Image (cartoon, rainbow, N blue to C red; front, side, top):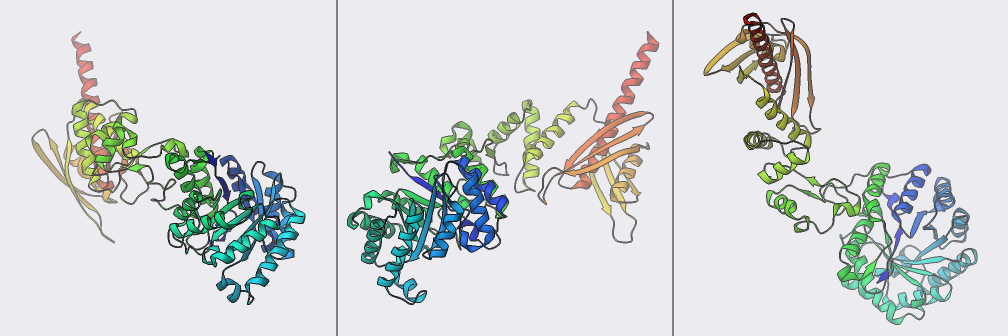
Length: 517
C-alpha cells in the first residue's frame, strides 16, 4: 500500500472565506492541532498578503514541529523572498509558487502568451529553488489548460527543480473521469514525472472536489490538498475528513493509506469551526451533527443489534465517543428502552409502558427528544409510582388573562372518582392556578420556592417546574413537566400537595399507634 500525503490548506485557502479572518494566535492554535492530527504539510498562509499573515506564518514555522510548513507565493521575486523569510526557520520548509497556465488566465489576466508565461514561471521557480530545497509549483487553472501545453509546463518545472507539482482544479470545473485523465496523461507523457510528487488541489463548485481528488489518486497523484470541513474559496475545497476516511474505510478499493490520527478529526473540525465562526452543516459527511445520528426506528433497531448495519465508519474512529441515538416520534420501544438503560434507570415493564405512552405524547409535540427530556419523563413516572398515595390528579385547567386584566384560573382535579372544580384570581396566571388548586383541596399552602427551567434549548423544549410548599410545619417538594409550563407548574403543585397529605396522614397514624401502645 502506498502513502497518500495530506497537504492541509485550511490556514491559507480555507481562510479566504469572507468573514473567516483568523488572528495570528488562532492560526498557531489551529496549526498545532493540525500537527496533532498528523497532516504531512501545512500551508500556513500567503506571507506577502499582509504583515499579520507574515507574522502568523513565521510563528507557525518556528513553533510547529512535524509537518512541512508551506508558504504560498506568486511567481514574483518579492513574494518568494517574503515567503522564504517567513518559513526559513521551519523544521521542514517549502515554498509554493503558482502561476496560471490556462489560456483564459494567460490572456485575460496577464495579457501575454504561453511562451512568456512559462519563462516567467521557470525564472520564479529557479529563484525559489536557490533559497529552499523543497519547492512546489502549481500551474493555476490546470483543469482548463490545453493538455499538451500542460505536459510541457510540468516537464520543464521538474527539470528546473520542482519537488512537488500541483495540478489545481482552481474553479471546480472538472468532472472525475476528465480530471483523472489529466493526471494519467501527465504520468504517461512527462519525462521525470516519477521523480517528483504529483499533488492535486480541487475546488467544490460543482460538488465534485472529493470525487475528483480520489480519481486523481487512482491515476497517480500522491499528495492531496484539502481543508478541514471543506472550507475555502467560493464553495470550498476537497474536505480533509472525507478524503482521509474514504481512503481508510475503502482501503479494499483504494489500496492506500494516510498517516492521519483519525480520532483527532472531530476535535480539529470543531476547533476550526469555532475559531473561524463557520458552523458545520448538520448533514456534513464525517463531522456533521447528524453524521452518526439515527432517528428512524428501523435504523435504530439495526444499530442496536449491530452498528455495521447502518454505519460504515465507527464514530470512535473520528473522535466521537458518544453515539447519537436521536429519539423522535418514529423511534420504537427498543430504542427508548436502550436509552433509558444507557442513562442508568432500571424500570419495570409496567413503568416502561407508562414512560412510552408519555414519550409518544411529548414526541408528537417536539421534533426531537433529548436525553434531558427522557430523564424528566422517566422521573415523572417513577415518582408517580413512588408516591404512596396520589390523592389528587390534575384533570384540566383554563386561564383567562391579558394586558391590563387580572388573571383568572379555573382548575379541575380528580379525587378518586369525583371531579372537583374551583376558580380563583391571582397576580399572574400561575398564582391564579395555585390559588384555585388550594380552593379545590380546601387548604392554604405557603409557596416557599418555585422554579421553572427549560430542559433543552429548542423552542419546543419541555419545561420542568419545581415547587416547595409548606403546611402545618410540613414541607414537600413537587415536580411536573410539560411542553406547557402552566401545566407543568400545576402538576408540580398537585404532586407537592399529595405528598404533604401523605406525610400528615403517616404522622397521624404513627402518633395514634403510639397512644394505643
